[in-house]
Image (tube, rainbow, N blue to C red):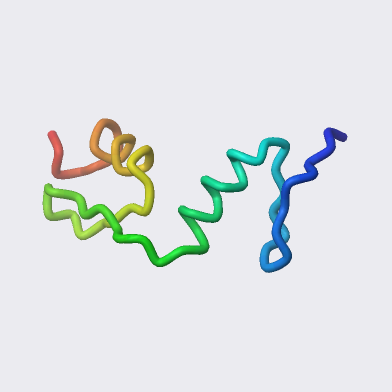
Length: 63
């Protein structure tokens, strides 16, 4: 099993790279502004990446 040395006390998740831990903390453990779907499907997203993927592939109102 690969070692995952980067973790925080408040969460059982661990990561190989510190940058992945930072992204996880920002996306899951902070109260950052959420990005709304502009197509009125009522979904919101904490990261630009998940917002982008939703818009390109998953939004039922985008097509």
